Length: 382
Image 1 (cartoon, one colour):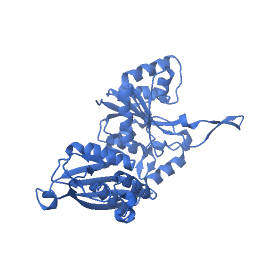
Image 2 (image 1 turned 90 degrees about the vertical axis):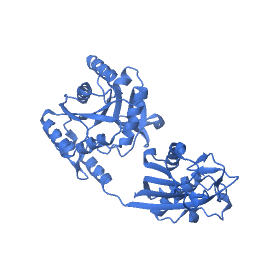
Image 3 (image 1 turned 60 degrees about the vertical axis):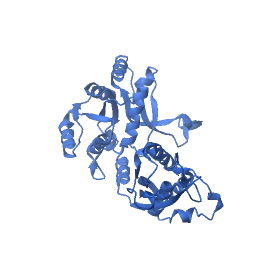
Image 4 (image 1 turned 90 degrees about the horizontal axis):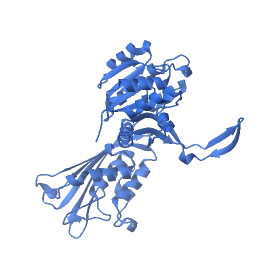
């Protein structure tokens, strides 16, 4: 069950480390930092409305920014407090949603899909925070000297958004304020009082702008990248005595597809689309049917291997697969197919679309002699 969520965008800081420049209104890829943050909220499926918490002198400026960039969800702009904790609490109290997603106004590259994962984790656990595992070796210092190494396997760099059940958050924040307890981020108050917070893995690109160098880095990440589009088509005839596999799902049917591998026509079309976009030839070149090591192999494994080659130079954008078959009906299998493809490609299911159609009894698919598939794929050069 989904709940209503208000994004509490905390943007009341003074940008002390920016040399007097207000980072929220600096351009990143031609768009102000805060505008990108608000636009991300509009793309989130879970977020219903927005409360922007800013300095008194910036209230009208934030309102004008939201209007100029066509922020489609309701936006309330309020005055913040003299520290982040107070601003977050004021935003929570002004929120209409049952849950709040607190985020830094200076994180312009947040992925809406990751934010939705945080919100849904909060629905289940009461509180959740986005973060990335530590990858650098972490040392412990004494008097400026290295004296030990910290186990990084249990460490995470916490980001925003951080999502909470609103009433509980307000109760804890008010209690922490009365107790005079300081917090470094929003989920710290849950830690103080022994309550669980679910960790949700985010992305290293979810950068918080703190220094002028961060503006340059975010601008570089926003720069247009070369895009590549590939198309794949495959067909296999139906044959009795074989299993029917489509997108890694075994389909109940009285015949399967003939081929050297498991003959998963949909995945073969997708592999061709990916290889075509990357300029790496086709499936027959990479996995020839003269090689016995591929005999009967799962096409999911072939997709994983092809993707590994493609990912050496490209990032995955999205794919769209159309399966053409008179029978069987494939609708009950579509979601499992999407999950399989997303897992093989190490991407989010929202980037994978699969459709099934018939040719109204026409052609070889209409005569139930075989199954065909088309696929298109978008890649971005790294």
